[in-house]
Length: 342
Image (tube, rainbow, N blue to C red; front, side, top):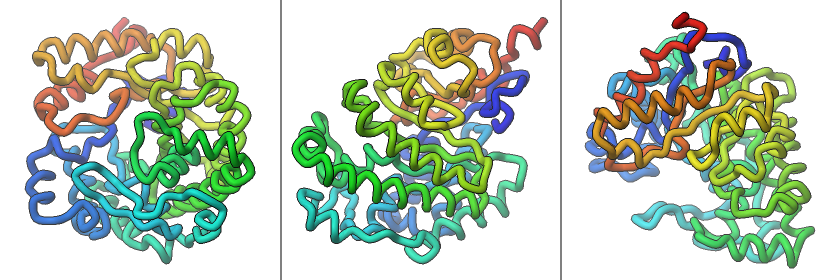
């Protein structure tokens, strides 16, 4: 995986799946029946157990820390709760006083469970399998704080961006500092790769992304980069219009969804970054033979150039057949690039 992200030649792409430790796994559902999501996440023994599940269940090439992108926001003082409707913040950010109440946390004090979880995972999995850390990117994190949870329109977020630009920028700057500190903390505790999730940034126009979001995202990446050379991935959903600008953030790889043609993405970004993706998660509900054929077709679309990490274009869905997820992994593992086959 590290060689792929550094765009070095390899026989076949590495493969992992976003949300690979989750509700589609029977073992996860059994644990979840006994514990709340927060209990699973904050108990190092349980979080490590969940992190490790995909190794045996589907044979993934990499592990990703079982946690949530909103953890740093809770550490900043935002009151977070998880319910059936997803994450909710009790007091959404609406004005300057709300922003002023946020604090800049020390991850080692606010989230010591992360370090212990990573230690337990490494002790069990060994040093050969890559371990990913992650966090939300500044815009996506700001949208959760301002909207109070998920949103279809991001209307409140855009209102603040347009009506109170200085306040919005101040919030983004605070978030960039906190996000970077969490990613550095994960790296210090054994993360081989880190991924920034900018899941909702595709709601913005290219002009607004360049003017308002690109600079603070680049700053966040620079803060993570200081003193380390761990590869950094940046994932966004529906971000085809933004790809070239996302390269300018300075990351090593871009995660693309299924609405982006891999060959076109490679043409647009050149060899400056690796690409990760991009099978539609809903394809995994097709008959198994079609899952295999669509996986192979996706591999072929990325071509023979180095710098591809196979993944879905978004997180695996909760009722996905495990055997179909396993079929994706096995298909990628048995694939060989054209030059290797020749």
